[in-house]
Image (tube, rainbow, N blue to C red; front, side, top):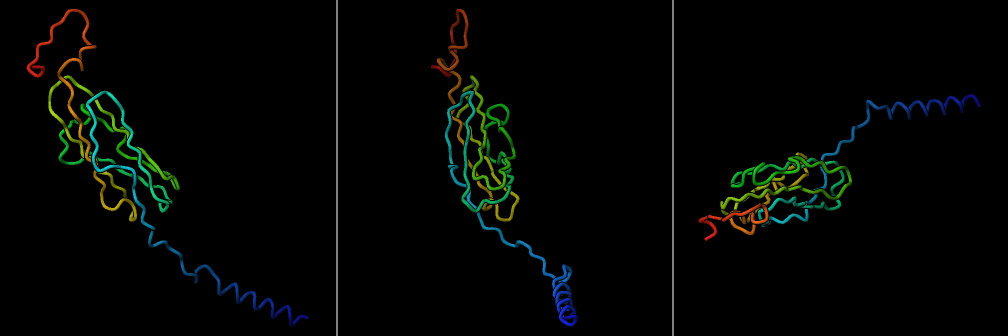
Length: 167
């Protein structure tokens, strides 16, 4: 009976030593499944007005970890940030396993006749399997300022509108 105990102890210690942590291979994730950003159009057109527009987006089922998306005003933008428009945030964090997010685009109105203006938003992530390159969204802000009735309701008392833009 004593021999059986020693044999069992020897086998257990041999098994334990062969599975020691320093000898084990370390598992690392080297490839993440790619995921796609869906629901955002490449181009939008909005009338100039004091309003907030929500641009929702979704991911496919491969989006399984937290991701940060930077929203940057890109080159070629003719509208002025914080005057003609503003962003609710320049960074969007989508939590682990959440499949959707939203870009908050805030439009501002004015009374100046300045023509249509463009905004180019560049969306990028910092994960190796994040957005494929950079997603660019083009937003056209259609000018509607400068003539009544757009500003008509804001006037009080007797007035006469004189403007070359309204001719």
